[in-house]
Length: 504
Ligand SMILES: Cc1cc2nc3c(=O)[nH]c(=O)nc-3n(C[C@H](O)[C@H](O)[C@H](O)COP(=O)(O)OP(=O)(O)OC[C@H]3O[C@@H](n4cnc5c(N)ncnc54)[C@H](O)[C@@H]3O)c2cc1C
Image 1: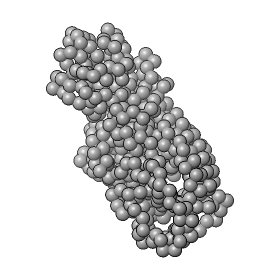
Image 2 (image 1 turned 30 degrees about the horizontal axis):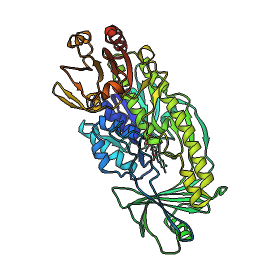
Image 3 (image 1 turned 60 degrees about the horizontal axis):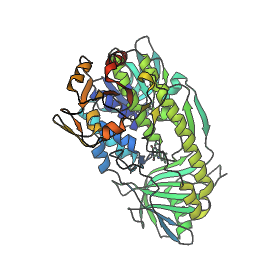
Image 4 (image 1 turned 135 degrees about the horizontal axis):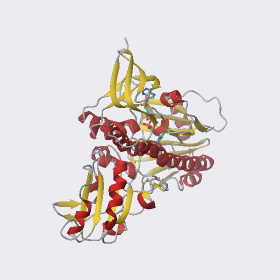
């Protein structure tokens, strides 16, 4: 029998995108349900590179420490050619250039299941369980709600939600139900993927075997004795063998010689062809798309999961504000800001995989050439929303900088310590305590801090420099850590008006 359950936001899909979104919504006190078609948490590694900006987001959500314990940085690479020549090289990840610009400079190697676990635990602390074995099969939009048909062990049900987010991956049921075109193409080259256990390699290294068909990569998955397997299939081979442990063993034996490395088990095997696609729209009525449901790209540069996590962080506070009474146009800014980011990621990751596939067939030098530039501009730290409708006075919505050495008024820490949480933040750079009067009466979820004498001291001047804030400047930082205003303190009424339209 069909039952109707009601919630503010229904998140469809408990991958990294859906879980990040649900965590941010739940800590805000928004009623949220998360449904997942699989019966149990995923055990496949898939995305395995977590970038600095995503780690900053996880810091804000209180899960970064746990996630860091499950990953590894700067894994060195060993290449072994068919004639047995061993060449060692440094990691393929590239740290963010300025060591002081972020607390998380390095790309973290981590299996996707080890990102999802801490997010699920965080969500459970807020009393939101992931509803496994529950598949969305259709939806119907009403004036002030959406009704989603689901199938679960209890039988068919409907869930009525004020907003629905399709975070249900590349083959998104929600996107299809909305008939939103997923524009782009499917890459011709095929790859074998998998998670395997093996004997004969050092789990502290990543191995690349330059083969005739391209490259075979084995990446250690830090919290386990598993390795992620990625191997290119000979270009033009349209009917490759089905993936199996025996086949993967044969590929290894052909390259290294029989028995040198022994595969003992596979927990995931897959034949993979990347898609390069972008949803024509991110919003249709009361339904939004996020993560791979909105954009699919090649794994090159490690961007897919990261882009989804960052989508979620952009969207959660907007949904919260609209549920609390802010104008719905705030939700349109989600597509305006995030779709161009995905388009840029699509272009760069496609160029990177092409370069890798073209070069990797030419031995060690080719593989090295293929990796050139792979880690360039992947940190996510320079992502900005230059045309954001949420910016006051034409300011570029760039990531609010990390600055350390702040101390005073009972506080010691960094700007990120001031931003951490679901609130907006106003920084008033002024030595005149009377200026604080200009900022009275702002909404309760705006935290105001004066930086100057008699308040929080910016002893090294790092905050003032990085925020480009002369004395007498107000800076407004959004809940997702992007700049929304930099104006003279004497114009604080602009701020009041601007916030009035964004914070209900
Ligand atoms: C080999 C490989 C390497 C990669 N490396 C990286 C990397 O280094 N860095 C990176 O950032 N990305 C990487 N990616 C990409 C990354 O895996 C994806 O971008 C990421 O999984 C997207 O997360 P998501 O939450 O949007 O979607 P998904 O992880 O696909 O999650 C969607 C969830 O929705 C569920 N679902 C689907 N349909 C329904 C339904 N109808 N009802 C309920 N639930 C449903 C699915 O079961 C799934 O759990 C890699 C991918 C591959 C294949």
